Length: 273
View 1 (cartoon, rainbow, N blue to C red):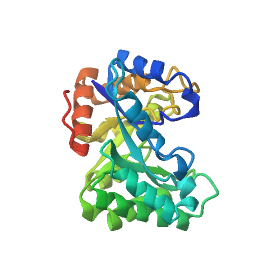
View 2: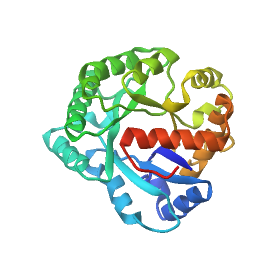
View 3: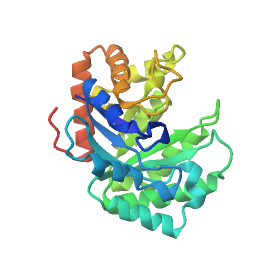
View 4: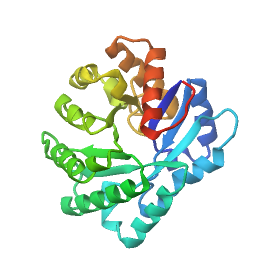
């Protein structure tokens, strides 16, 4: 069984097709999907939870869990009301994680100080609710400052909680990965690991222990080869898993078992792997 540890199922790109998308995931061996609850801003954080409840118990679809968080681009909207709503969502049993949260220095717009302040506030809420965090970290081209700032904030404001989390869609260095692993984080790879120019990232993945890895789609984004540029969906996590299994020198089945166990351990879930 595979788990897609990061998919934006509430994307309008799935409008009218989500049930078929979920059924294709099951057909590809995907037994669970973590639906990311960021929407297009705090007013839409609830949508992932709504989907979990809509499809709960339905045959032929994966098990769904939800997250909730305020994305770096939306942190200028992280006022008291938005943070109170996030806290309410984190209290729901289906919402197993806070995120994706973090820093983004690639896109201009939201000042870095505003992003950092909201990042810290959300870590505090997640710690109080005992929810692991899902980290978004996108540096400006050729500059590691975003990654360094992200890890420093985690060490200062999150490490004492000892709850860990996921570095989502990882694209950093082995040193950055190891620094996060020491704080209880799992390292998740998406479809870009299949891209021809991603050899450096594949080398990093090869050095990360199997018990620290996850796979994801970041659907509807980052479709793996040979679907690059198309709308991504959870069934295609199998292609990312196949590449990661090849890198690690294990079977896809072994990789699926390991990554599912890792996911279950982080979120304290009882899963049949």
